Image (cartoon, rainbow, N blue to C red; front, side):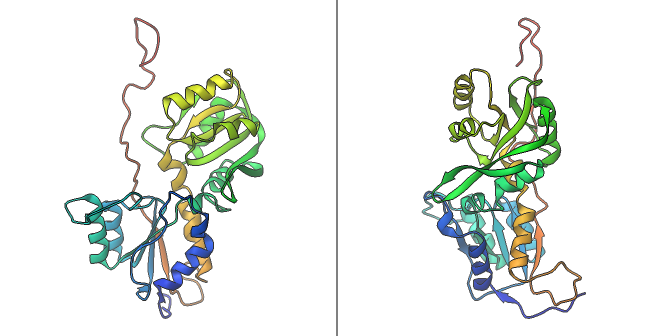
Length: 295
């Protein structure tokens, strides 16, 4: 076991988090920063997860984490009670009982560089990257080039390999044989950026949480041409960032991987839980004999 140095306090870790992902860069509607915890409490173990679900909080408590860092907020909208009769209240109570602080880095981590979209673009091997759009004073999303053009179907397979597996896979709008070279990416929910994707000259736009009408209208505007559209799943796209986020925090705190030559003050771990809400999909592309269509 490596020698253990004196613990950092939560306030010092929060300072490092906010240097990496300044709260001022978050969207106006967002709720980021320290949610629970005492700035003077010691921090020796940090768990990173996408969502602060009850199961994730239980995982943090079982490991003895002093700090849980999540991408998605626990208290995004107004809450008037933290009684344990609600899931939000039970979550806050569980965190307090475990002595585990909660910190959220959401849209401020989305627009960071490297941020959520950068990590996805890197995983796809995109070169000549640039922001897709600007949100506030920060670049958001990424646009880049594949080293070699591929078909849309092959690109979808490439995306499946790059992202963690999901119950629903990826949904594609466009002809499988179409050529893809330039790719636009927006981690998380991105159906408000179709105009930016079209203006970027991308052959395909990859995001998540896509709804029927915005996609249909975007494809109509494209006249069945580019950009084609892929819904890759919210959890799959954003969870890819967690390892990078944890690595950045440990580096900012001057930490090395366990077993290194210097004393370790903070140990980091990624949550082993999937917080994707979907569990399975039924009837995908099942032919209807009477129409030859799909269900």
